[in-house]
Image (cartoon, rainbow, N blue to C red; front, side):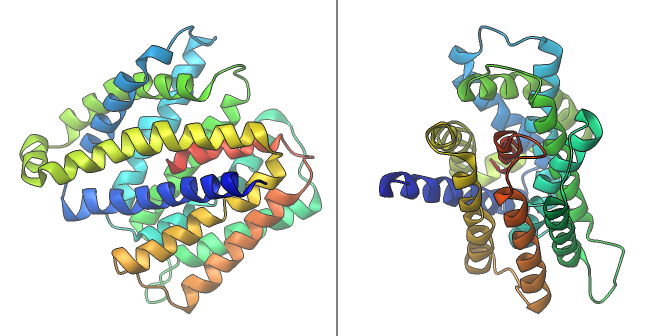
Length: 300
C-alpha cells in the first residue's frame, strides 16, 4: 500500500474513533437527547447527500430498511448506549459486528463457516463478553453496552441485507441512509424525549460543531475515502488495518474521557481483536470480505 493511502486509512480510523468520543461528549456532557442527536445528524446527511439520491436502487423497500437499520436505527441504539458506556468498552463491543455478520450470513444466506473462522468468532465473542462483564456484579451486564451490542447486531443485519442490493455507490447509499432515517427519528424523539431545543441551545456552538463533524466529516468524507481504498486494494489488505479504529478509540477514551483500562479490559480487548484478525485474514469461504467490511458503516 502506498504511504499516502496508508495515511488515509489511519485518518479514516482516527475520524471514526474521534466520532465515538464526540458522541459520548454530546449525549453525556452536553446532555443532548440521543434520539434527537440521531435525528438532526441524519437530517443533515439527507440534505447534503440529496444530489446523489437518484436513481433509486431496487427494490426500494430494501434500501429504505437497510438505510434505517444502518443509519438512524443503529445509531439511536449506539447513542443511547454510549451515554452510560465508556468509549473504550463500546469500541471493543462494536467489534462483535464482524462475527455477528458471519453468523447472520450463515443463517440467512446459507454460507459456510470453516474451522479457523469459527475460532475467530469464538475469540471475538469471548473478548466482548469479558469487556461487558462487571467483575463486582458479574452479570447482569452493563445496560449501555447491551445497547451498543444491539446497535452492532442491527448494523450486521443491515450489512447482510445489503449484499442483495447491487450497484449502490457510497454517497448514494449515504443519501438513502439519511432519507430513510430522518422521519422515523423525528417521530421517535418527539414522542419519547423532551427539552430537545432547550438543551441544544444551551450547548450552543459546541453542539453545532459536533453535528457538522458527525454528518459532514465522518459520514460523507471518511466513508468516501474508505470505499475508495476498498476499490483500490484487496479487502484482505484493508481488513487488518481496521484494527486501528478500536485501538485509537481506546487510546482517545483514556486520554479525553478518562476511561478506565484495567487488566480485564486489556485481556478482553486482546481476545476480541485477535478474533477479528483471524476472521478478517481468512480466505473467503464464508462471504465476500467487502460485505463484512460494509458493517463498518456502523462505526461512522
